[in-house]
Length: 216
Image (tube, rainbow, N blue to C red; front, side, top):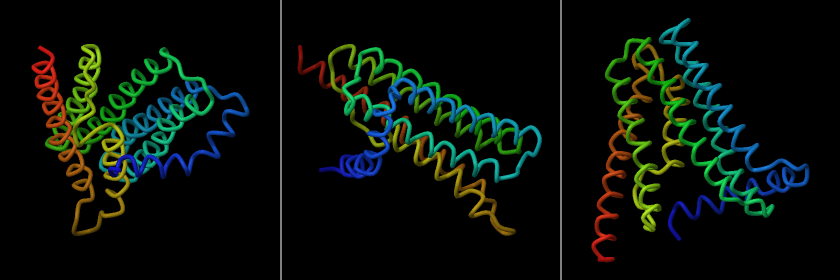
């Protein structure tokens, strides 16, 4: 069992009582998916407002990181509700994937905008590159599955990206002091995603190339 499977089992064990409660009161997976998007939009709006009204104030970034981490729970609960409650559907899978992409685009745009307004051009560029990598990781997998190729290889999949983004944002104000700019913690986190997400996208392209060669 790899680390992702172990963490998944641990998280499912933790959220199962909540999942069963949602099923009992009739909350559908699509509602949970939509609520996750709403929380991510709130996080992005907080960053945009903080950048416009109070550029450089890190507590906006910290709160946004906490909201994004909370929203990530909805991303896990929707699939769990669908499976445990017998409500899985093809449209639900499509709806979940599309809203996940919107969530990533919206939140990374919020950080991108906050960094620009707060005077961190290099950090904003890294965030934009991270955004490109995040979308391409998902896009390559979707195209691969359209060609009947399983494509889940790589180091920086969506759960890892959410955790690194959220923790980078949460730790930024905590690590900030008179001698250290906490914003750098978040910028380093974006650098990690920018590098590993794009490497993952190319890794998946190479994986598909090899799989298609075998099928010939």
